[in-house]
Structures are given as structure tokens and as C-alpha cells.
Image 1 (cartoon, protein in one colour):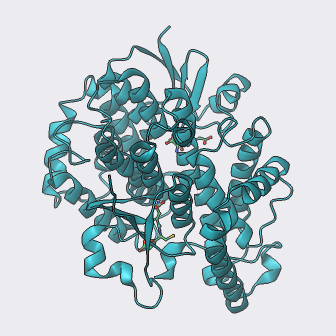
Image 2 (cartoon, protein in one colour):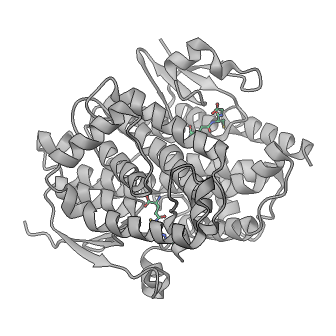
Length: 216
Length: 244
Ligand SMILES: N[C@@H](CCC(=O)N[C@@H](CS)C(=O)NCC(=O)O)C(=O)O
Ligand SMILES: N[C@@H](CCC(=O)N[C@@H](CS)C(=O)NCC(=O)O)C(=O)O
């Protein structure tokens, strides 16, 4: 039985999981959970994820949520020899560091720019733009080393997490990212290395961008 | 083989630092503690530290030249690297994908939901004396409910033995306690907390000083920004970030 991914393509965390499945070439079935329709509060869904957020992964009788943890689970379970999540503790730890950074700092800084408009019709708080600029500088420096997010010589989960975040920012057009040369070069390159990129990430990021623009 | 001790750059009142310290102790590793003065001297913003960690956060470790930050990534690294194929040490972060998935899930839950909701709720009250925000209080309660649900079915947050997810969440929960937030209503969570405090031989050594420091800082803030009527019965607090 293929694994099941419950989610929505506009959601950045869901896109991390979809890209991981594509890159690992794990067959999966996408089950759409429409947040606007309240699908996440249905009893069947609460059974697999009492936290009622998306994404959720179901693999046989194992179910879990938290996108970045799902990505590491998939790499551990299906990517034993994959360079996507290297086994050397020192290299793996840099990937992990990037995943926590993505959640707590990078995606957060992006959310602080786009969510106030999308959900409350407000402008971002003062300081949010400067913060994002600082964070983008950090990300650019991380990528500068080897052309990949974790300083490796090929794609890792860190790139997938960063690309889900960054593509969302780019598609909203809410922030001028042109000054970050390495970051932009990385974005163009890495898109081409992800199997079915449009389906797994591109289209959802575009949808998110359009949604943002519709609120302006 | 002789290892140089792992250097840990830290500040005692940071829950993330305390979690890493507990992990080092659980693995029986030697550590050299390097306390940063972040509040008067801003040592974490000094060029020598930024060169190590551009994000200037603690905890940061230096393991014979290998530098790493983000507390949860550090804990995963330490167990991956120093479990010595010893089953008991490995059980802190077992290798089978499902256990690991559950642990990683809770580590991300901690950073993104539990600890975040503590900061989001207490930080404005503490720093600017704002009143209690019901929405934020609910987010915190929701995270605690979820955790309590987990613990109603098992001894530890993942399964029946101690893992690094317990250590991470323990440091968040003790931070919450230091804010005089009562968790006794969460029966299973209280039971778990009590058990860890009693059973972990290194609990006091790793936590006591920092928790006490944080508690008195938080109470003094309440004195300054007091607005206690609005504070439910919590005092106030947090966010390491804003000490600077
Ligand atoms: N930390 C989670 C965040 C998931 C999340 O926030 N999902 C949002 C959509 S992008 C959601 O499901 N919101 C609805 C809800 O929480 O009920 C992850 O990375 O998986
Ligand atoms: N997610 C990080 C958070 C680290 C963090 O925010 N540390 C605070 C102390 S609790 C800090 O160093 N703040 C100073 C700064 O950000 O400049 C971790 O778990 O290590």
C-alpha cells in the first residue's frame, strides 16, 4: 500500500513532505484536506492527527504529523543510502540544524511578513522586514559554502525545507530578494534537481502567492 | 581514545541550554561549560562568538572544532555520535524509523508549539506589562492538553523509556513552572514532571540554578511591569531573545 499524505498543496509544510516523497521516489497517494472546508476537524482526521494540522503522513498503521519530522522519518525509512539525509552524525546534524532553523527562524520570518495581511488584513509589524533581511543574509551565507543549504555537495532535506519557505516568499512578491545572489542561483538550480518540482512545490507556492496578492 | 571535553556555550536561565546539558549528562560525556554574560556584556554579540555562530544563540557547542547550534539538533547529534553502540544510551534516540519519527515529531512540537506558545503568551505580559491574551493562553493550553493526552498512555512522551524528547520538553515545562504557571490540572503531565525530577540523577545539577535565576528575574519583571489583575494568576516572563 502506498503511503498517504494528507494535506493541501498551498501549505508550505505539506510541500516539504511532497518533495521528500518525490526525491526518495516513494509512491504516495495525496489526500486533500481542505482547511477552508474544515476537513481537519472531522473525526476521521482527528484520529490520525489530534493536533488537526496538516500535513499528516500515514504509512501502514503508523501515522505522524510535523512536516520536517515526517521528512526525516521518510529518509530514515525509505532512503537508507540516500544522500538526502546523510548518516554521518556531523553532516546530519547540520541538516537537522537547518530544519530547526527553518521552522523557528526562516519560515517564521517569512510568516511574519505575509500572514498579517493574509489573515488579519494588517501590515506586518515594524521590524519584520529588517528581521527578514537579516535572516535572508544568514541563509545566503549558508548556501554560499557549497551551493546547497547544509554545505554538502548534493541535495539534502535542508534544501527541500528552505525551498518550500523561499518559494512562498518569492511568489507573494512581498519582499525584494534580488540582493541575495547565491540564494537566487541556488533556487534556480535546486528546482531542477527535484523530481516533479511543479507538482510537489511550484504550483502550491504559486497558489499561495495568488492568495496573498488577492488580499492586498 | 581520549576526547577533549565538549565545550558548551550557555547561559543557565536558557531552557534550551539546560536540555543540552541534561543530554550530555545522560550520555556521561565530559563537558566544559562556558558561561556567556548575555545581559550586561552581550558576549553572544561579540565578533568571536558570531564567527562561531552567526545566529548568536546559545546553546552552541564546540566538539573539537566542530561547531553546532540549535539545542534539538545538538541533542540528536550527541546521541548519534556518542551512543557507543550501548543500547541504553541508544534508547535516548533509537534508530528504528518509527520511534525516531515520534521523537522528532515531539522535538518539532516543542520548538514550534509548546515553547513557542509559552513565549508568545508570557513575553508581552512580562516585557511591556500587557494583559493576558486569551487567544495566546488558549494556544498554550492546547499544547499542554495535547501533551497530557500523550502521557495518559505511556510513561514518557515517546513510549516507556526516556528520550531526548523528554529532555527538551522537560526544559520547556520547568520554564513554565518558573513563571508560576500551575500545571497541576494536567494530571499526567504533572506525574511525568514529578517522576523526571525525582529520577534523573542530574536534574538539580543541570537545572536548579538556571530555574531559580529565571524565576527571580520573572518575578522582578512582574514587580516592574505589574499589572497583576490582568495576569490571571500567572506572574509573567520570558523570551531569552529579549534580554538583549
Ligand atoms: N509545524 C507544523 C505546522 C503545520 C501547520 O501549521 N499547518 C497549517 C497549515 S500550513 C494548518 O494545518 N492549520 C490548521 C490547523 O492547525 O487547524 C508542520 O510543519 O507540519
Ligand atoms: N531554537 C534555538 C533557540 C536558541 C535561543 O533563542 N537562545 C536564546 C537564549 S534562550 C539566545 O541565545 N538568545 C540570544 C540571541 O538570540 O541573540 C535552540 O533551541 O537552541
